[in-house]
Amino acid sequence: MLQPVKTRTSLSGKIPRAVHVSTHLTWKDKAAAAALRSGIGRNKASIKSGLYYAGNPGKDSPVLVTSNYRLTFDAVRKELGGLDVWILVIDTGGINVWCAAGKGSFSASAVIKEIKSSRLSFFAPEGILILPQLSASGVNITVIRRETSFKAVFGPVYARDLKEFIEGGMKKNRKMKKVTFTLKERAVLIPVELVHAWKIIAIFIPVSFMTALPFDGVFLHRFIPMLIFLEISVINGAVLTPLLLPYIPGRFFSVKGLLVNLLWAVLFYLANISVVKNAVLSCISLVLLGTAAASYTAMNFTGCSTFTNQKGTELEVKRSFPLQITSAAAGLLTAVIHGISIIAV
Amino acid sequence: MYSYPLNGKSLELNAQKCTGCGLCTEVCPHEVFAFTDGVRAVHIADSDSCMECGACALNCPVNAIKVNRGVGCAAAVIGSILGKKGECSCDSSTPCC
Image 1: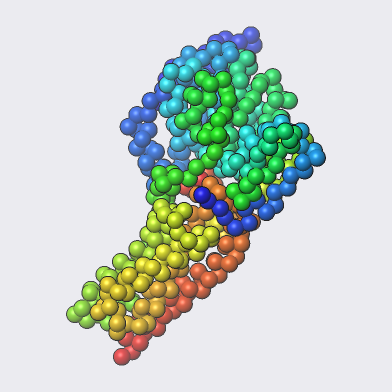
Image 2: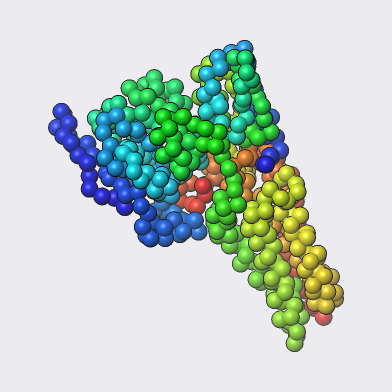
């Protein structure tokens, strides 16, 4: 990924460095991206902050500013084929631009600090800083303009529009300004949601065992469908609700997850009447637990979305979380009562 | 296409102060602000799309915009209820954002 270093001796005798980057992603980059998307290798998710370059930039070439999250940096550099640009990487602790801006680590002072420590004025004294638009919730651009010698603009939301933006004289059209949340964008976020839900996925195995009792000749005919019902409930919240997000009724994500799972419960009941007709307590337990899980995992997707505000999310948690906990607790209790009643008999 | 409860509820624009520089329309990712022909000041065209990220208020050079800025993440809200530290309960060691 990183290639020879561009160095020039400054007047002070110290040698500022800028590192060349390739604009092509290798299979290693792609594998690392897939792993990160699945929650693996998070400790290797950041790259060193500092000054990088693509092509052969000069003293008046544009300076792209970005975060040091590996996926962000890769998303930027792969769009830079044929361009001569500097890339100023800010230390955001391996967090992407938007989240880092929200948390305050991608700020005007962080950008100014990096401009100084990387000696940007030595390499690109006349370069215009192009900040990612989504850094604007953390970066006050007036402060950068006032406290450094650099001109600064907010560029497009997405790295894929950088080339058009630069070649078009740094003008943004409507498309470049707008955040989207397409099916593909929602889909890439799903693996991490499933990883987050592993505790729920795991606990549903012993729970299904309990609801499927007694341990008789047809135990597996109850256990397997019951386990499938619960695990699909997690899928309903963590996968199906995110994928179908705009098409499911309800404004709270928890309500969307709930609705999807109630539909699933009805379908499951109709398909398995022979299995569940004599297991009323088990059925109650399954619906309470599965629906709590679907609602909860769906609610967690608010953090991935591009359109939820904090006060609304607080309201959603305040209304939904106690119900989810109560439903899950009641479901567990019902499963235990069913288990005890079988063993006692 | 998307909206969410309480979106844009805390967003306030002081049109008297607005100089019409248009920086808010440059930073808003949801086209909340718009200009009308012949009017200097910007106006709020779509507050229901406002996720209250705070980019407009932070960057407005004349402080004409107010909004309660925050991150709309249920995991962070639950994290803070459970006493985890930080604005967002996640840190760089966990696969959050």
